[in-house]
Amino acid sequence: MSKNLSPEDLRVFLSVVRRAGFAAAAQELGASPAYVSKRIRLLEEELGVKLLHRTTRRVTVTQEGERVFQWAQRILDDIDHLVQEVSTAQGEPRGLLRVSSSFGFGRNVVAPAMSQLVARYPGLQVRLDVFDRLVDVAAEGFDLDVRVGDEIEPHLIARQLAENHRVLCAAPAYLARKGMLRGIDELSAHDCLVIKERDHPFGVWKLRAGAEERTVKVTGPLSANNGEMAVQWAVDGHGIVLRSVWDVARELQTGRLVQVLAPWGQKANIWAVYPGRLSRSAKVRVAVEFLQNHFARLGVAGSAEGWSAGPLRRPPALSTSRS
View (cartoon, rainbow, N blue to C red):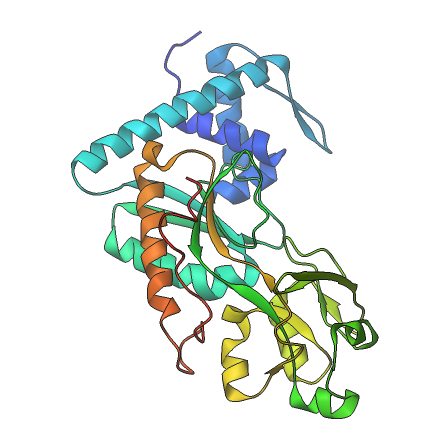
């Protein structure tokens, strides 16, 4: 058995295990399934053990593969930390930063921020993936998840990037047709645009006004797993939508949507979530600090061109970090 293990083969193996398949790993790595299969075969030959059981339907890890998986994670973490330590000493973070976020927020807010990040730090490469579900940051191999919402798993570390909340709003045409709501108890009788998106419980809105909290079961003619579509349906007059202020600020400013049932809303702050402490990763630390400053700049915009319309604010530095 050769002692010349390839870090690239270990990375491919980790991806196959995390994605539970060769095709999914190939898509993640930007390679072909044939390349992934070849690297796994070479790794098995190097180690002299079978790492994976492969059938036409699924890929499972052997007992030896489980041990190699644990070692591979430690080895690649050490290599990554070495690269980051050297690059930090040179004053510039380097390497691949894997970032995840939700569909609309990722496309409209996080993606432009990542564009600015790599322009400032050319040694960084960013891979941004967007999902309609919460990501298991550590298990799926992400360095950083930028999320809207305050439900954060206790084994993860998080730093609040900005204050944010969700508001109820509808088009003037809808309210002219259905009538303005006079109280929270009327909400369940109205057409509501339900979204299944990440941390949203489907068809259940947990709302708060001051110290009072209510849970309302809502229904309506249209539902989706994408908030941007729901906002457009609201603009078209199909019903009431519950969305973050960052997503509907422009529609509220231009009058295409109006807020209803104020001050009822839902807390949904913006967080950076990561699996390890920032002191262990220069690239994650730089990214989080950059995002904090980025959101602080966005938060002061109050014109129609600004997306926050005032309610989005950078949190107090000492009271919101959990890192």
